[in-house]
Length: 330
Image (cartoon, rainbow, N blue to C red; front, side):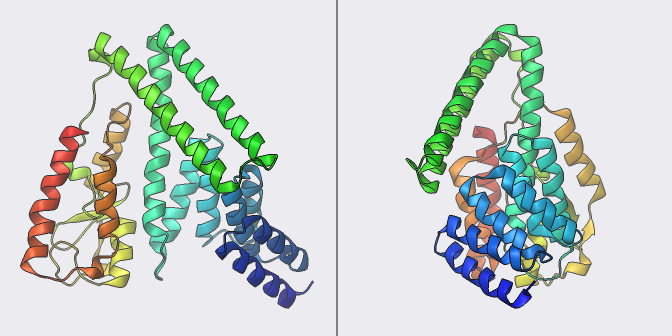
């Protein structure tokens, strides 16, 4: 075993990965593992490359091996594991892995670019989990809806399998396959949504669209909070997003007053309200669309903003108004 040679091979793999050559990167990481199989980072790096290639089962194997070697602070392994489990349509397992990655991320004292992505992925897993539960509820209520959804899902899965086969044969590259799968997924979700809307017209009492209370929405990410914390001024944020902000800029994003990570406290009452909301509502009606996404991207780096009258007006007046409008029209 040669740790030095393994490190050299890992660097070659990193170079190939950065250039988008994920298959070649995976080969170099595999060679590095042969030289030094006790390094958990090698398995995590290969898992990331295989994640880009859509090799979900192999990603899971690599992540589990990496976690065996380092389970305490292995945030990336749990995050990659969650993504692979999600793609294999195991939302419950994916949610467990994503929450573990989130917990590790929120405990970290160093800055990481993954905090926002992990927090968002936790919500995505929750959405998938609740969608499954809602689908089962609706199917029990309507045999016709169940049959029609099953047919659409069967066709969707066949189309995905066909894309996988074309990718394996070399007809499609990784990017092309991903784009086709994304298009198929959007089309499938649109069909399911339209189908349920038709049934909702006939049975509105059992398919009511829920409203999301504004106090459950994080002021940074504009997502429903999963792990809210409260500041000394009484403002609540999602833990991961506010911690990541404070690592870059120790000020409250809204009030612009000094704020430090040790001053944050768990908002237990709000967390219970969030949990009760998840448990007490069926389906999913919180989708603020492209406008919210654009706002979230603008707000990911608050250091671009200065404490001017215009920015205070934007954050305190305009953003909440836009959010209320989005929630009413979503």
